[in-house]
Length: 163
Figure 1 (spheres, rainbow, N blue to C red):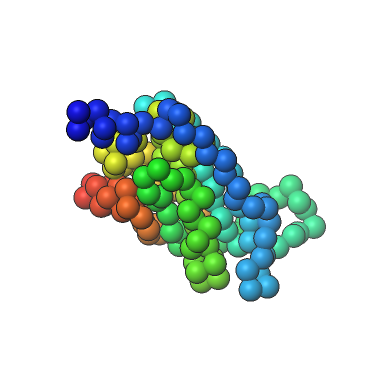
Figure 2 (cartoon, helix red, strand yellow):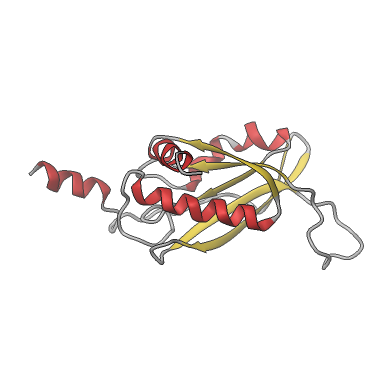
């Protein structure tokens, strides 16, 4: 009976999360920032909904020009169980003004990402590996720091032991 109860705790098949991350362009302390939303594919084939927050690039004469922002350190924020990347809104105002990018994602089985279950860190560590590989390949970051809350913290510890 206890295991059945625990199984229900991590079953996300009936949860519906509506994320309101705000406008794609915003300011903090008079400085302009932007958010880019996109999907990555998890190792198990689920879509992972992601957001990358960064200092807005100054407008140039050629709006079609390649991203010319210098790479910056990036904090990869990892949400807790029964939550989503929406948690990142609580820390953006603390991180972005310090020349840090912030990346967050909904783990598989959470938020708007695919999947029905969470594993309290085991499979989320693999999702985190996908995000880290993406950031390293992007050329947009110089270093990556992990900030996790609850399940996100255990996920960070599991990943740090491998990377």
